[in-house]
Every structure is written in C-alpha cells, then in structure tokens.
Image 1 (spheres, one colour):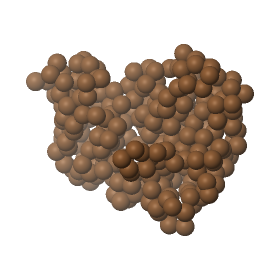
Image 2 (cartoon, helix red, strand yellow):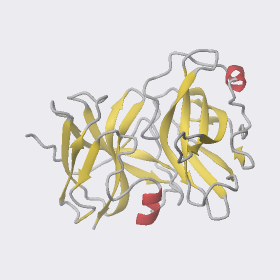
Image 3 (cartoon, one colour):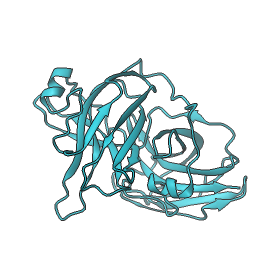
Image 4 (tube, helix red, strand yellow):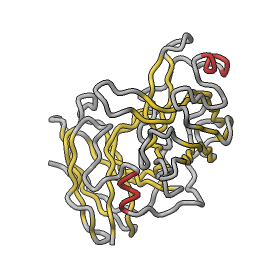
Length: 284
C-alpha cells in the first residue's frame, strides 16, 4: 500500500474558487437575454425568496474580483441557516439545465441579514442562485437567482485576498469544515486521524470514493482562505496528492507546517469539476 507523504512548503492558487464547480463545462452558452428569460435577471429574482431581499454589487467582474451579494432572508428562515452559491449549467436554449454547487457559502445573521463575498474564475455569462433546500420529505429551494459575467482569459490565478481572515473552530464548522470530515457532497466516506497536530507531524485521511470517481483519480489537498467571518473565500491548492485505489479506497498521510486552525478540502478535479470532502485541522 503506497501512501503519499509530502511536507507542505508552498501553495499555488487553485484554478477555480471552490469545490463544487460545474461537473463539466457547458456545451450550451446562453446570452444575457436568454438567461433573463430563463429567470436569471441582472437584478436578483427574489420570487422564491420573498419576503426576503437581495442585491448584487455588480453584474460584470474580472476573474477573482470580489463580488458581493447581500440582503435579508425571509422571516421564516432561521438564523445560522447556511446559504450556498450554485451555477446554472444549461442543456439547451429553452431554459432546461441543472445547478452545480460551488463551495461558496455564508450564513444568515441573527437579525436576518446576510453577506456573501465570491471570487470567481469561471469565465463567461452564467446564471447563479443563492439559497438552501428545505428539510422536508420533498425538499424545495428557497433562494434567489441572478446572472453574472466573469471576464478574463481563464488563465489568471486566484489571488490571495488582502482581507483574508482567520475563522474560529465554530465559524469553520458553520462554513462546512467540520472536525468529522464533511462528506455531504462527496457521496463516499472519510475519516481523519486527528484534528490537532504539531507542525510537521503526520495526519492521515482515509475513506472510500463514490461510484462516480474512478480508480486512479487524483485527489488533491487544498486550504481554505476565508475573506470574511461568514465563510466566504477561496481555496489554495497544496502540493499534496493521493490517488483512488483499484478497490475504491483512498489514503493520504500529510504533514502541515503552517500553524493555525484552517479548513481543508481533499477532492478530485477534472476540467471545471471538483468533488470531495471538507474538514478542519489545527496545526500547533
């Protein structure tokens, strides 16, 4: 059994903001007008969000430029509710398509307000939605939709934010980086040997991959860089990888030298797709 062991010495920007980018690049591109007709106007469509409100700082931004979405949640939404950003991937020009979850989230404040900051690297004009699914027998989406154009040549690297902030363990947990690996969007299993280790000490993550992840797939470790206390931010890829074995299992032993409590993602990236697990780790 071969286990990857690499000491972190540098980080490189990940090609996309987050885990959960589209599973494949869309074959169909919609114009701004077509997106509007499909329910993605420039001013957020809050029909499924009322009586909540939402506003967008801009509808046109360069790669990795900050875009801020803010507003108030409906009065029936509980404080602390996690709101997630999703990109609409069209199947045709008639409005058929699906949503792909992005790893950009925020939470509803005690007073019902919310602020989400995103830094996108996926170039083009797309529809997006922010919200959550109700916890019921037949889950319904509660949120709002809008369109956003990201400009660039798709080669720009993610920028480390000058507003990068440190999150507490509780804040990381609310953002999805739990002590027990978060496998909600993974579909497989995962365990971690420890959530606290001295710098340079080995930490092991192991588990099973979902059926859609083939043996031989490369899994890469990334560190989450938060840009606010609500869980907005982006990932920076670390030079640490392992592969999914023939039996569908994976195992990664790594050593981290950067001290502090951070959120991490371990997953598979193919083109514009990211699928993986998230967890928090404290390096002392």
